[in-house]
Image (cartoon, rainbow, N blue to C red; front, side):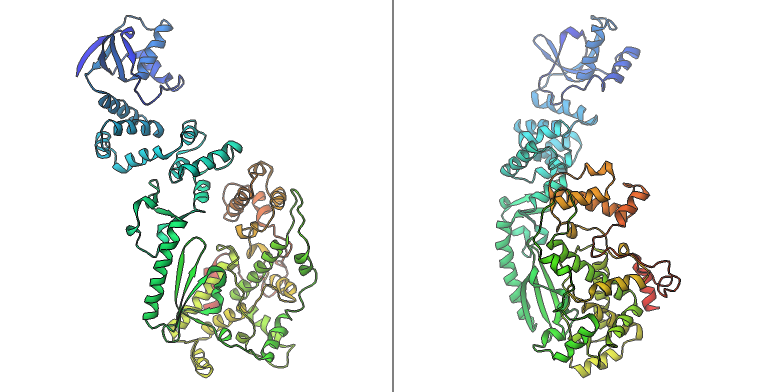
Length: 598
């Protein structure tokens, strides 16, 4: 290191500095300091035939040049420099070390680190030289995978670093497709989430693998270096054959363990409501492997078909009891079925419930009825007794109807969450109290009789709820009556969710947004169906959780809205309603649990 004094005219900026000079606005404070107190720190240079070139301190050098031009700094005034002999690699390390300390743009760090690698430095050398982890260096170098257009978007602040991180997982062809779509519509793929969602249509996380991910050929694996969990992914075409082979081995393993049956089902063929969980006797139980389109395979061990699923021929008189309570399936309520069978008409920017939407809402409404029954034991009894009064003899409820499949509902839906929680509670009761649902009828009755009143009531509520089907005759008055006498509203049991929104057409989504969103948020809907669904769903989630995105009246407008089949008001203020004051069927499940088990 040699401290020298040079004039501004003797110095030039090294062309190899990876970071461009800061803007005049960003340099304003530094320029003011130079003018007031002069130069405090030396500029690092290396000698050249004509003088010296600035390696670190180019912004100070530029500021001094501007002060000279304005007459505020003498042209022959000495500039203090720390002049060193160095090769290009050392010069690059010094330039970027200074820049990293003042928040150098990661894209420029990438360019610098890439050049250092080309000059022979290793990742460990770079990490030690800058006092950062090797992972940081690996992350920066991963930007080499980005197409030039993608790097330009980030440099120009059109996209953020999270977006760039997601793009590093895409192949060159996939990046080109995404960039072409952005060029056609600049609002597309604005976030990392959108990019990852697009890629995950073709990629599968190795966290879902039944096989050992460490045995996979490395060239088929994509890593997300920016994920704290360091998740790895494979293309579905590479993943599925390995998953199939692992599944075959798992099936053989379970068969060797003595289970009565081992099944492999697709998601659409697996109805969890047909099974009892927690059966410990392998000779009476089965293992079901459920395959999902994502490549995931979920194992359900210790399940058994419920009694009514095991009976081939159900006595006609048993079905009469359900007809007395809920009506005859063959007589579908007037109006609703006509709408479902009607030809779908696309109306631009108008909320219209298509046949697909009406089918979804029927399932949503059935789930709400199940939720109410599961949260209020008295209403469960009222519903049953009211139906039995019209029949000459009571029949076993469990042998009358198959269970409704709620898999089409949003997994975070209000009603579905309650239903699944209660079902899990009953499974725990059976397990802890030694109830074997595969026992002969007489033995099963004896086991059930050993349960406490509260436990038996919860089992009764669950079994009653399971008889609710989405297409039962008279389900509209049942739904409306339960809402009314429970003193609740549709908003207590249902909220706008992605599964429902996915059934709407693009025009209907736009129309719904125009109905419920404030003016300032309507412009955020976007043009694609996916954008509209995600925007409305996020705003609805925020409104229900009391977030700060909407004002109080705007939140009420969103949360109070419900589609036609669910839009029913309650008699909350009716003093003669015995349920209005005492019954709480809101979101707080702990209060509900206390009411049931008190």
